[in-house]
Every structure is written in C-alpha cells, then in structure tokens.
Amino acid sequence: MNSYAPAPARDKKRLAYSLVINTNQTTVTLMYILLPSSEAKAIGGTSMQPLQDELTPFRNILSNELLHSKATNLSKNPNNAELIHKLNSEISSSDQLMPIWQRYQGVVYRNLNLTTNDPLDLIYLCSPYLGIAAANTNIPNYKLSFNSNIGDIGKLSNFWAKNLSSHKILSREGVFLDLLTNSQRLILPYPRGSTVYQVDFLNNDRKLIGHFGKEIKGKFLRDFLSYDLSLSMLETLTSLSNAKLTLKRF
Image 1: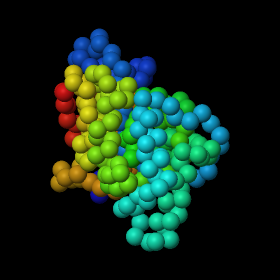
Image 2: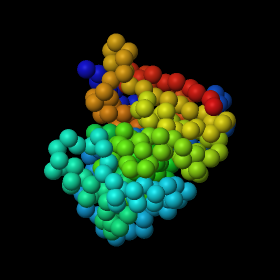
Image 3: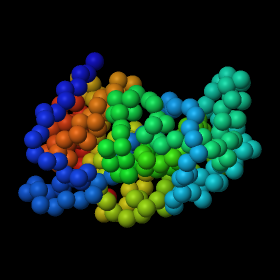
Image 4: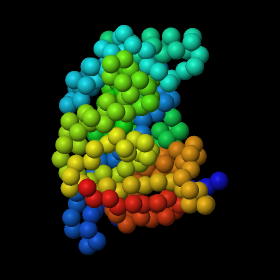
C-alpha cells in the first residue's frame, strides 16, 4: 500500500490559480484542472440557477432520451434499475440542485475537500451526464456511467467524444492538469496547441493503482491547491505521491 506525504509548507505567496510554464518563472498561463466525476453523491438540494453552457443542447438531448429509455450497465437488480430510471428521468425537471463540489461525495472528493476558497471555476469534472462542467456548477442528482447505452444515443462515451469539443475550454488551446482515468482521456478532445500535464498514481511496482489511488488523488490536488502552483511544485508533489508525471503537447 502506498502512503502520501504532504508537500512542505511554502512561505512564498502562491500564484492566483495559474501555472508557471517556463523554467525562469516569467510566463504565467491559466490552467484548467480535470477530474473524474463521482458515483457517490449527496441527495437533496434546493432551487438554484441550472447549468447553461455550450453543452446544454447535448444535455437536453440526453435528458429527453432518459425520459423514455433506461440506461444499461447500472444495476443488475430490477428494483434498483427502476429507481435509477426514475431518478434519471427527472433530471430535466428537477429543482433539487446542488453545486458539484458539494454534490460529489466519492473518495477523491472527500479527500480533496473543496471549499469556496478554491478555484472552483477552473476545476472541471468529466461526467457521463454533464460532459464536462466546472465544480461550481449547480446540478441535480443522477446515476449514469460512460458505459451506459441510452436509447438512440447509444454509448455515452461515444456520445460525448463527438460533442465535448463544443465546450469553451476545449475549443481553443490551453494548459490542463489531467487527473482523469485512462478511459476518460480517450473521450476528451484536447485542442491543438494545448499543453497537458498528465498525472497517474502508481504502486511500489510502478503499476497503476485502483481504489486507493482515489484517496491519493484527492490529497494530491488538495496540496497542489494549497501551495505555490508552479511546475516545480507539481513535480515535487508527483514525486512525494509516487506518481508519474507525463507532459503531452497536442
């Protein structure tokens, strides 16, 4: 089992949620952080401003299809399948909304422990219902998988792979910190000219780790948001967490 050592505290004033790209630390570029969604979610919510962005037309197509079609690959229990279908069919009409950073309750998010002091508008979640959305987005409860097949839409991974490039952060070159799973990376169409820092968490044999990696991922990002957001800090944290940092240019 791996352990995670937090980064040493830094007295230097941290940058305002940006990433220093070059070695002499003179160029600061806005960075987007990409995380997987959470299967575990808080229930309930209140009436709030719903999400409206470039992907809204595609979510409307999905929501409409969910009114009539049951998602596959979510439960082998018939009773659970009916409850899930009811939940998903009410997505478009639900007034029980909650910000993503509060809604998502999985292992990653419990260890990340986001607050309003974090750059919620720069942290994006890759989700089978949302496509991608910022952590401060208000969303209903839902239960879907990228492997789900929905009526005429088909497999959600294929549906979003064709449509994610419409989103503003994926329509132009940028800098990304990629903490997604390998399967989610196949869905994401990084814009040409983008720089991607991909982090994978490994065991002592340098192989990808599963469930325990979620805990490390949350703690890793918590540290990164709490200290000097530089490339050197990113390298320090990946070393401390026995992770692999890969630079990719598109």
